[in-house]
Length: 108
Image (tube, rainbow, N blue to C red; front, top):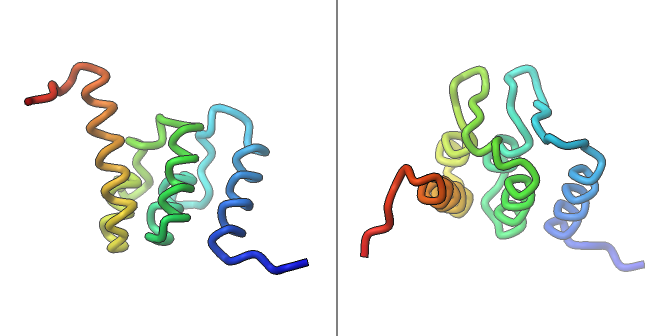
């Protein structure tokens, strides 16, 4: 059997993990109260990590604004790690959520 590329392995492992975790996905993964979204956002910036962040968000939207013990959200973690693609995904998700809630209006 051919060995899978690391990015594909990451996506498969994350999909399996998400399937095993019961809803709501509010589980913290370490003593600093980092959620799955914190960890993925800080861990890498390839397309696989961006897709994983999107999968976590789709399962647990409340994690987008969740702060860890340091007061950092997943967006803070992505920015601090220099993960630009992950940062932009999280920013777009935040803006979309704000528009949907009526907190912001789209300008033309």
